[in-house]
Amino acid sequence: MSETSVFTRSRTPPPLAVKAAGAWITDAEGKQYLDAAGGAIASPIGHGDPAIAAAMAAQAETLEWVHASAFTTGPVEEYAAAVAGLVPMDDARVYPVSGGSEAIETALKMARAYHLARGEADRSIVIARGSSYHGNTRGALDVSGRDPLRRPYEPWLGQTMRVPTVSEYRCPNPDHPNGCAIFHAERLEEAIAQAGPDRIAAFVAEPIGGATSGAAVPPAGYWEEVVRVCRRHGVLIVADEVMTGFGRTGEWFGSDHFGLRPDLLVSAKGASSGYWPLGLAIADGSVHSAIEEGGGLIHGFTWSHHPVGAVVGLAVLQRIIEMRLVDRARTQGDKLLGCLQMALSGNALVGDVRGLGLLICVELVRDRDTKQPYPRSARITEQVLERALELGLLLYPSTGTVDGTDGDLLLIGPPLTLVDDEIDLIVDRLVAALSGMG
Image (cartoon, rainbow, N blue to C red; front, top):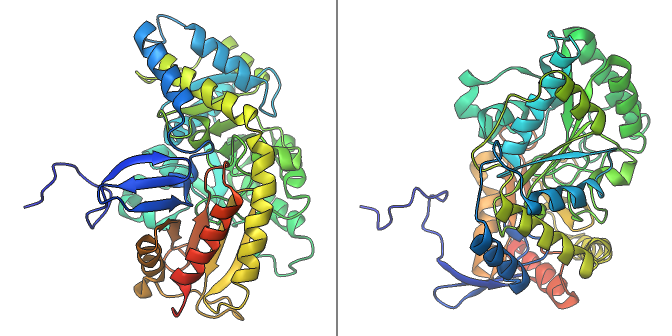
């Protein structure tokens, strides 16, 4: 019989964490782990910040919660105003929820409500990319293209149309590297035509790839071409910034790198840095106005618009600003990426090292020349993770990334407070974890 009553996420008993500070986590045995994964690429300000804990406690003592259908609160109003001033949208309206999956579900309903308000009831189809991840609730999983997570639940899924994965390392364009932006725009145009332009509600995509495509930066001109297609057909653009928001890539939002101004933007993870379950579904002012004029959004969660969550979000935002962490993500990310590329350049197991800011991916392959992935049966990711854990290094894994079964990625997304000595440790420990494998 198990010694725990917890329905755990791990097949093997995980270490018992007892404290954390900065980029370090300590277990019950006193062993320290360098959190190069930032949990799940979710910790911009690092662990154990006393200012966040103090803000959380003070708000809980004053007003811990009220239902959003009956009241608004000062913290929610203040936080929404602060976020609205940062996102690449006009007159943004912020709907706070409890995480990224809830935020995607909310954004999808916003898109549907927008089209209903405009008298376009046939617009219900969502288009997303092949290798993508947008959450684990049923609607979010349907939009996601991460096959290992979808496979057990396929009978419940199947309403989303797919366009090709955007990855310069594994680009599907036969003329790569020429004309890749046009290639992807044409595939989107074809998907819209196939379904019927008056039936498409939204195109959902990560501005920069996350867990499934591994920090894949789109080719030059990609977003400009995609925006032209979507605007021509009245399709809303939903930017999934759950992983790339709040400074992770060296700009406030991944969209900022490309001048992208989405109709809906979703964020989470870095919004609260793990100190509170927080996600955000954000609507452009014109989308919000249409929904309100059409009767409002029929939707809600008990814990949405939570005042303690808003206080935490605002305190995290202030810390990101005070410590200049957006700039730091850019400079430290450049250092870490350069060091990893140099250290792993001769490793036969490593096919590509890529990224932007402090969102970095190491893609593992069986053959560097052909880019052939390891078979899933080799469990190469699990082997590297185990060796890294023994060395006190935490990484964020992803599998099935090439064809839904094979393909191995390691994501690195430490706190944006990362110092040079920690960069050296990440590189040294990852090199050691990969040594002699393959």
